[in-house]
Image 1 (cartoon, helix red, strand yellow):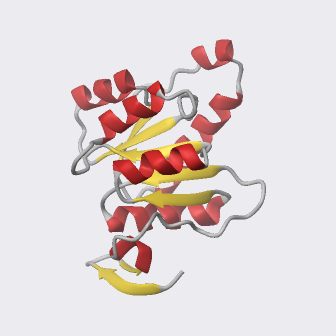
Image 2 (cartoon, helix red, strand yellow):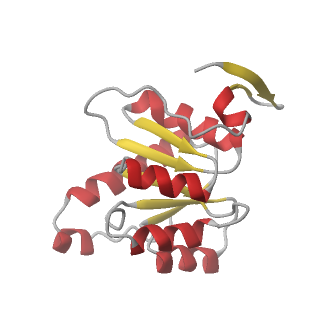
Image 3 (cartoon, rainbow, N blue to C red):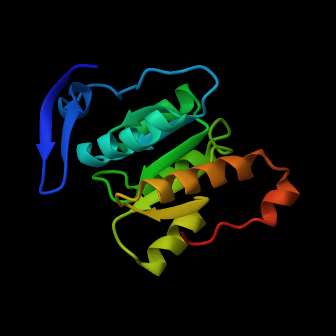
Amino acid sequence: MHHVQRATGPWYALSLPECLTDGSPPCEVPHVEKRPVVLIVDDQPFFLTLHVNMLGPKSYNVVTAPDAARGFAEAKRLPPDLILLDVEMPGEDGFALCGRLKADPTTAAIPIIMLTATRDQKLNERAFQAGAQATVLKSMNVERLLNIVKVVLETEKLSPDARAQRPLGNR
């Protein structure tokens, strides 16, 4: 992966992969066998890179998509074990993509965690109505995101009856 652009701020400095900055097809972090595949769909390169850096080194193969159309295509191509989906994106938003993924037989069973920048209960309700398993605030809290990803993946391995008894609620 060729790194060409840096993003900096008062508390971070990231080198962004070229595919996150030039509008090219989705990025794929090199895969290691027998790791769950996580698809991250977010239009903001900073958050794509942040979540790749959070999950990639922590036993997950990560694939990214910068918009809903490419996210849907990647979900059908792979399919991943889990999708992290941004709520607010230009064009088709995360709610619409979540609904479309849940309506498609090839992607309906993939668990989805929706990422949001706001604490809005109505937004959380919309996410669950669209079919998401959890909502998470976009943040820098690595351990919290990793724990939620782990719980969702473990819950999906359970029988349908056992899953029904472990609701995740609003995270």
